[in-house]
Amino acid sequence: MKLVKVGEGTPYEAPHHFRFWGIKKINPETDSKNLTIGVSHFLPGGGAEMSSSPQERAYFCIRGNVTVKGKSGEYQLEEGDVIYIAPNEERSFQVTNTQTATLLVIMSKMN
Image 1 (cartoon, rainbow, N blue to C red):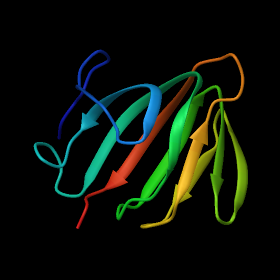
Image 2 (image 1 turned 90 degrees about the horizontal axis):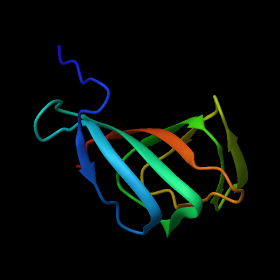
Image 3 (image 1 turned 60 degrees about the vertical axis):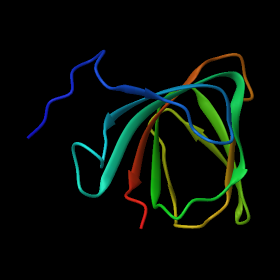
Image 4 (image 1 turned 90 degrees about the vertical axis):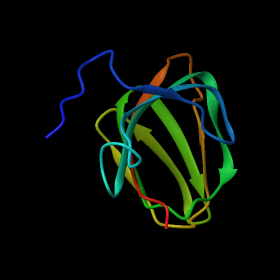
């Protein structure tokens, strides 16, 4: 077991993200064999450019609203919503209002 308290974790930067701040809570290099769990904060106007990753990812919206775009459509992620993104599936994020958005990010280990 590992407990990560509020205020603990490792700050990180993510490729293709802007107006963003993140903290890893669980890291496959030190804590887990298969998962990365982090919290991402996006300022108003912040987001992530269209890109893909070989990882499975799930995003749980803790606070705010985020527009998620992909080849299969456009989705409005609101507080309490979860979106799953399959390996190699392209997606972009954008905060389109004046509130900061906070997402819980769960990713599988890259193969």
